[in-house]
Length: 378
Ligand SMILES: Cc1cc2nc3c(=O)[nH]c(=O)nc-3n(C[C@H](O)[C@H](O)[C@H](O)COP(=O)(O)OP(=O)(O)OC[C@H]3O[C@@H](n4cnc5c(N)ncnc54)[C@H](O)[C@@H]3O)c2cc1C
Image (cartoon, rainbow, N blue to C red; front, side):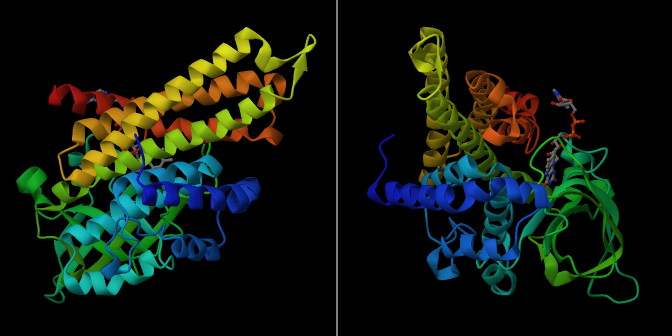
């Protein structure tokens, strides 16, 4: 895909920032288990906290192709950070722009786009992952006062559940109505009844918190409902289209980060009197990885350009996520192989990317779920 001047400029500026300012610190963020809050201000200054939000709402006014290009570059330097950004942009800011009331936008958008508020998207529960309609978190009308809801229930695997100051919570408001009885709420997380029960220990992406949340008699005012009662399932799932483009972009980015390390290494390391890249086995492996990664990149940018055109792209977003996440694991594994034993050491950075990239085949719909969406469209 040939990029416009603006898209190429965004790609170049985010790449420069990510390589110079993020990559040297990524291991330290992982060890600290998080990011310094001022980092999100830096990202906001680059337009990364509200990339596709219109300029009149304080956003960067970029298109989805630019958004994907930016996420690729951030992920190439720091995978966990790209997860936080993908949720912020695709699932929180976009949902607010599409379904928020003017007063909700006025109240929440400035701090989200300004990097002062990180958003969490709370859909999954212990018994409701792939089958999102099985959620049990319940919102009932408050009995003590007549201007709100009381939420009770628990969520599992919620990214930024701890650092997030605003959570988009999906809950059942009418159990008789099935998918049409689900609603969404925008909830500031500092209110009574919002509990972080656990920050999970996981295989990778240690700098991004993944939480088990509990809501206990948490009062939520009527004006914090996003959309109308019963529209929650549609709101939650419609944003997953952009979400999957975001995750697919981060897969391409992480794979690109690993492959660049492997190519650099293969041009310096010698064995049997030659640079290892001159051994055909190594050169061909890198050629295969680069070609597969390029194919995945094109799928991602194609889905993003469809989204920009306003055309439906659920199938293409799922194809991009499926192919990019599975390709990325193979590319990162092949990159480790290229470094031999050094690939297995933390020092070279590829081992961390291997851990970080694995989850991309699981969150925002597993590979099986993407296949299901694609098969239905076929
Ligand atoms: C690090 C991390 C961060 C996450 N962040 C968030 C977040 O911010 N917000 C949020 O709401 N969720 C988040 N999730 C949850 C994630 O989206 C779910 O884990 C995912 O959707 C899978 O659900 P599950 O874990 O319950 O697996 P299950 O749904 O139980 O699936 C188990 C296995 O069965 C397969 N399977 C299930 N149903 C079918 C089917 N119909 N056909 C074929 N195969 C099927 C799956 O593909 C999988 O292999 C996160 C998860 C992780 C690990």
